[in-house]
Amino acid sequence: MSMLDQNDIDALLAASATEAEDTPTRPEKRLFSHNHTDNEQVEIRQYDFKRPERVSKDQMLALETLHEAFARNFGASLSGFLRTIVEVRVAACEQMTYGEFVAGLPNPTSYNLIQPDTLEGQMCLEVSPLIIYPIIDRLLGGTNQDLFIPQRPMTAIEQRLISTVMGRGLDALSEAWESVRPLQFEITATESNPQLVQIVPPNEVVMVIGLEVRMASRAGTMNLCIPYNVIEPVMEELSSQSWFAVNRTEQTQSTQERITRNIDQTGVEVAAVLAETTITLRDLNEMKPGDMIVTSTPSDTPATVMVGKEAKFQAGIGQHKGNRAIQIVRSIDPGQRRHVKLPKKK
View (tube, one colour):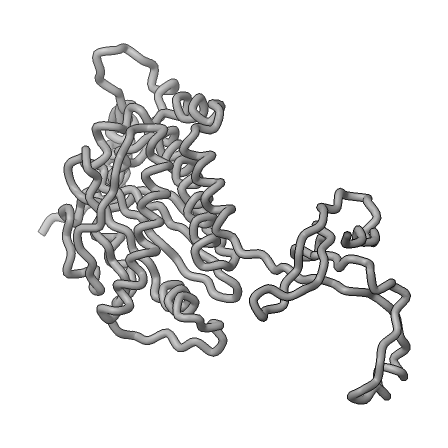
């Protein structure tokens, strides 16, 4: 066996160092395209093929603004229908795959398939049971206090009740989309398990508009899922410039009629105040049945009709067909004296 002496080892080390110096460095990455552009002026971003972005930021912004109008209209319509304040607002607007959307939904829930009349394909509107059952309880005359949210699919009666609410939601959705393209929406099917419904392949891109619904002390979510291939024919019209131009136009006649209709259905409290006075807490505590409260208001002074907390009319007190009634004498303007004597009967 031959052995290397120190001179041979030094020669090998020197040769290795020379080869390392002669080895060329890795060439710079180049970008090949039809347009000759400097690499430093080109923005290169990572692209995830599992979550493709097919909708631009301007179109997503326009889509969010459009459905903010839908949220306002739907909230106003529900407030008039349920006779209570209902707030609906857009909480999120993002694009994802249909599989990711379905995987994030609860089971059971209210999963409604929506068919636009002039577009191919279907959308879906998911409404959380956390807000569905408070709405049903309100429709049946409940107060939503200590309300139990059942973990089961809705019954046929519950679906019939909530279908009226969904119909108002579709009307508000049609009004919001009218600025882009006149569309009429119809619910074609309802399911409690979203996993059983597949309107598009799991890897298909969808736009999801997440909405938050609040009614008194209750709150829940709504999710409108719009597949890209459904609204692809109108995506060019969803540019930010055209949308903001629509926003600057005056209110249409249909919008004015809708606002008037919702105001007409709003309930207000009306009360007739005969007289007002002040007493001490001791007198109030010592009051017994049969005691009289003396006021400084003459008997011929008309009652003040209060609408909410505002004095609106002066009226006389009487009876009509055996029921207590008031007869409006005149209206009260802001800053006008409330107590004016009634005209004497001839």
